[in-house]
Image (cartoon, rainbow, N blue to C red; front, side, top):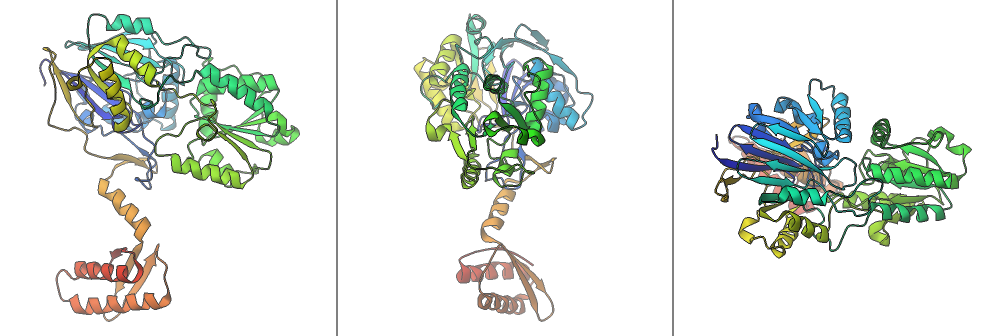
Length: 536
């Protein structure tokens, strides 16, 4: 037990864009905010997703009062279906759409018995030593919420993912006056979204994006293939309105898109005119200029519909000259290479591309605040302490500088690592505890959660880059096989002879395997420039 100290423990989301998970602890009460996943970059070969290390929560299940989810993006909800049972199935609080997306993932995993309760911007929760209130923020998914967490040590405001959109599409602007009211009479701590902290100015309005897309789509004479994030409901809503206006039929490719469109429609967030959506078999009945394809794959995900289409592997749908592919999305850090490969494949199939970083068009609006809005949030709250969250450290460093400009003392700003423990006592003194509570690397492989050694990823990369050499030793002969290496037969024979000599030299030693492995690795390197993993 930690008397009279509020502990803030990020288990994910402060070293990367993804796997967001924040823990607030006071005495015997724990409040968890978000439980997301991260899409791995090339440093994690073979992995589907990365997850927060919840070892600390797993060993403190009885303290957990609730899991509160700020919104329905996978980097905030994606870990729930993999980890909620390890947490003892605590009650989950979230907005209507957020909970619907969580339920769908739990049902997909056949997980039952998880209590959930809907909240909105007017809700108030009493959870042990914590009192939680909410405020509406603009993001690029409906029902996004920020939090006011009242603790015995002081008030904490957590923005969630947000931007200040003064002219949002079919929703209200963020509740600035409520934030200001919540912050009145001293706020202890502000935790704020850092994703766009390196971007000057304001983030473009979602409504403006819709206007630009409408003009763009109207001009395209061939088929339009449109890709964006499958949870970006406001963007999908605008595409439906544009297609209705331009008399285009919509075909959907991608399971996640179909699921999210169904959920949003059932909850009343989308109204789809009868006959607007058609099956792909009906496409041939419509002229090209009357067709728009909605496809998953804006991040170049390996198994997504658009990637399969670009490779010519998606049923009978083929890219043809005259097709225009619109990427209404930005690259999640780490996905840049996959997106570039996807775009190259589409160009090779004679498609035209419209992509914001290339053309500078306002065809995508980030859901995250840029510098002007971030400064305004800090000015509204005026906290004593500040933690930039949701982003890599270079993003948080930009955010730190913005906070300093707003008058927050540098010693009161904390750029944390996953597993760090920040303690604040009742005298408003803050310090980092020495113990780090997130050391492991949980990952999803083949839909199983496994705890991987970080060295394992280095081994996998080495295997991919340097190859593998297998030796099968018999009494006076050695059979050798190479994987991931290619060279002339002459060199292969020389390596085999060297391996046999090494075996004869060291076979009577207790450490003969290690000696052969080391010497043969060096010999192969001298002949080929590659130093493969040698397995006896």
